[in-house]
Amino acid sequence: MLAIAAAERWRGRVAAAGRRISVHWRCGDELADVDPVRVAQALDNLIANALEHGGGQITIEGARRGRRLELAVRDHGARRPARVRDHAQPRRGHGLRLTRSLARGNGGRLRVRALSHGTVAALELPLVPGREPRIPPVHQRR
Image (cartoon, rainbow, N blue to C red; front, side, top):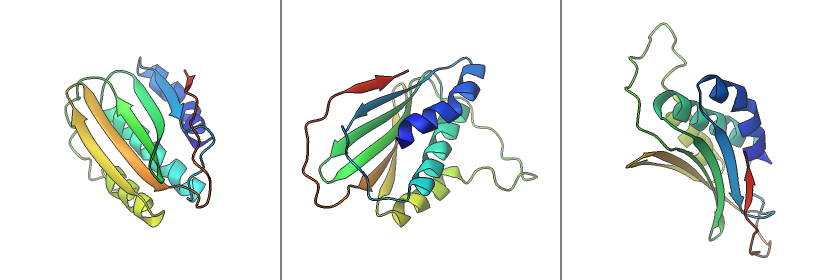
């Protein structure tokens, strides 16, 4: 599963920052009709943003929304001050734009919402056509 793999890739960096990362999956065995490499890259961008600009625990949440799968990365703390962009590192500062493009390229979209305690960035991705909806169990991994 892409969400668990992303959490595992980031667990060391998140722990080094004194924070935690967890996965809350409420989609059962639903499958998104996407390029897994591109979605993994998008999740990495969202986790990096949550780690750099957010605070508190980072949660990757999966939920079914109609005929779409929503993969959301949420931080649960106060926003940290924005860093000044280092023009010597031209690849920095493009994560959300790239993630939005990756979502569109997979037939989905990206939504970002500021909350009173944190931020949530959600990828909405199409489900594999023709599968019957199921009532999923709740899975948590810390």
